[in-house]
Length: 188
Image 1: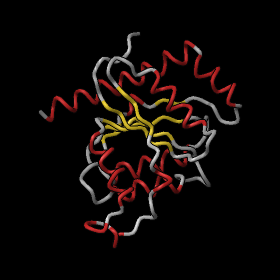
Image 2: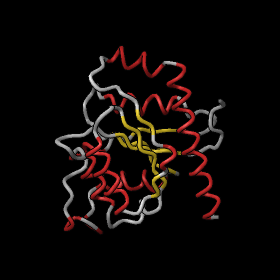
Image 3: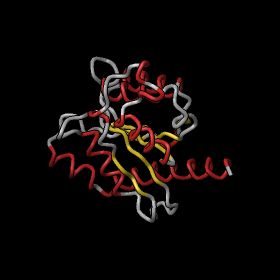
Image 4: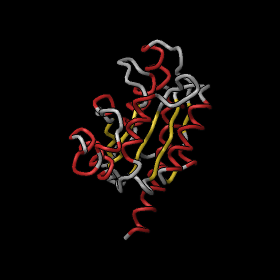
């Protein structure tokens, strides 16, 4: 299957801040499959965002939040991968999404959810509910799940380099790119 050929900018949000995160490894692998002008940039700002405070919106919005919101605005679509913490969304990711609730960067933005575990349905349900509440466009056909939970970094690399896995990633990414391009054409 050929790489997507669109020239889209996709911004990837990783719910885990761990250095050796399987979610981050999954996002990197998906980014490596983009090619042909489509770029995937993994967000590095989530851990730098202050705790959401409605009193700091508007003119008092922190610089890190403005930078994060501008990346969201520029993105043609978002790819989100998050682990489950205590049956919920990791706090850093939830905080980042909270900063976007009353802003205009996120509504109707296409979102591809990916998941690096065979479990974690509570977090996926909670994340889906939050994303629907802030009016994103979830591209269900692009959802991709692979079990990297409990694997060593070397095992993860082997799984993510497997030709069948790479083909599945490309297929789901292409579904997302197609939906994102269609959304862009409808806006013109």
